[in-house]
Image (cartoon, rainbow, N blue to C red; front, side, top):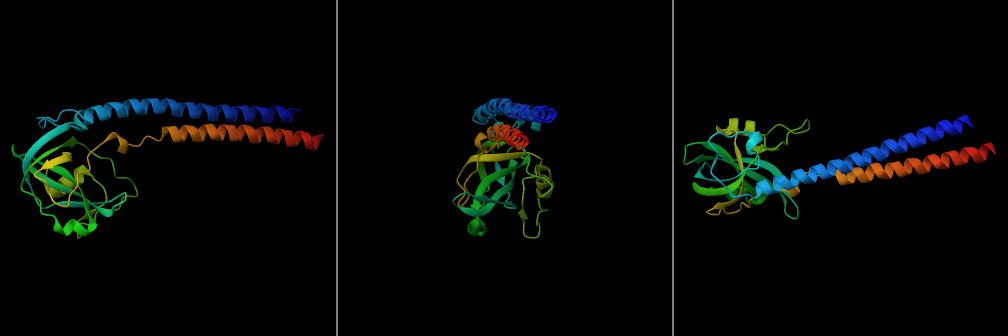
Length: 224
């Protein structure tokens, strides 16, 4: 009898913990959806001029409109596009009409077309301020010899190109630049996996409960 009590206790405890983790993920899902709604609202706002004093916390995702001269000393960030294949994000310095040099993510170019790019000197750009967090332990160091980078590290990119650590992700630009397609920010690209995590924890809870009940049944049958 004692073994049934302890087995039942651990089965109930384990099930309760797993159900709690599933509910916690559902709570996080609601929290994340609220944040994504706020981000989407900010992203799609009316573009404005660059603020006089820019900081990441206050101005991340801020819609802006900038004009200036592009420098053709651009950086290639290796990426791939679904149904298209390998290519690069093109990051170029832009000297604004206020003589501030910033970075602009112009968008995607196919691997085979990158040599054909000719950046237009004077351009008007609508986009969003952003400071992507793409660096982790596994990110390779950039191949500066071949001008191939693997992540948008704003600080490092700005040092390399001699600009301020400010990046605008283009939504559109005028005039158009042949071979480059903008990759604007949208909330759909921001990870939100809490629903999948919740399903996983709830599934584990039912599996744990089922296996526990089967264990008690088999143990009781063998002792009978």
